[in-house]
Length: 255
Image (tube, rainbow, N blue to C red; front, top):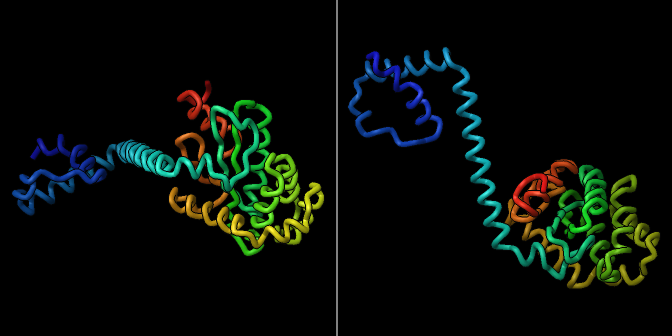
């Protein structure tokens, strides 16, 4: 069956990408099926680069499908992501690109990601930054997030919040209520009021909203970001984030 050799790449592609095999294939005899399997095997052994090309194409298609899914998720939750009253806003509040970060005060990667965020704020005066507490790692993380929300309630400008944020996230040791209150005190905040506000409906509503948003967008770790229509899970570094900002701003990594 010399003509079957021409079918090897196509049959392999069908197998890789899940395309339907033509109905006429049902008419192959057992001997013909064995011949086809042998031809495909020999072809792949002789041309292993086909496997790499096929997997690269599969990854490309999966990434495109994931990007479409992310865009749809962001579109469905736009107001809560970018304009919620339950969030901290830093940088240029009228910026042309909004950079949203979900973080946990006990996340080691978030500590490094904080430096990325500060660098981006310094170098990009048109960037709006939104911070959302997402305490997924421990009870201490929940306690620290509760204090953080109470800090935001006391400081709508975000200036003291940012000082508090840097002191707590950049400090040593596990974050919990005690460490968070100490950081708040050092930032010049009223800790007695914070103690009272921790039990408020606003604190509960803020953290609940952040968890619902993260679940809706498939975020299962910190740091995670929403930049324009893009969802980014994990610490990708300042240059990776800058590229995402460029895409959101002008459709390409560098504007």
